[in-house]
Length: 136
Image (cartoon, rainbow, N blue to C red):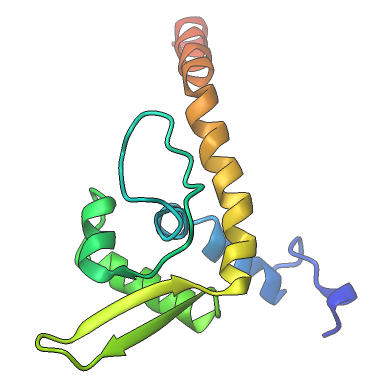
């Protein structure tokens, strides 16, 4: 398929599978974590310099993710060329993950979505409450 032939509205199009992958919450959060300083301070926008992160660092940065889910997410991102995995022969072995150029380009969009969700969450919660009052 040429680029002009990809259409995510078509069920069999590979771009639909990619869209499904990159809209996964853990993918978005892993990509954001690879570009952040790891702090959870209010207003942090994941705009730090990209840097390699160890698996344990990512796991601590993403409360609620299971080890299995984090491993699956990292493998999928590596397979798609969005991150690289580097193994250093230390004792114990050190494994780090880092954004590729392709991953960095996606990160810029993910960062915008994360920022939007954080900025407008109060509005969404108010709309949900109003809806539930009207309908419920």
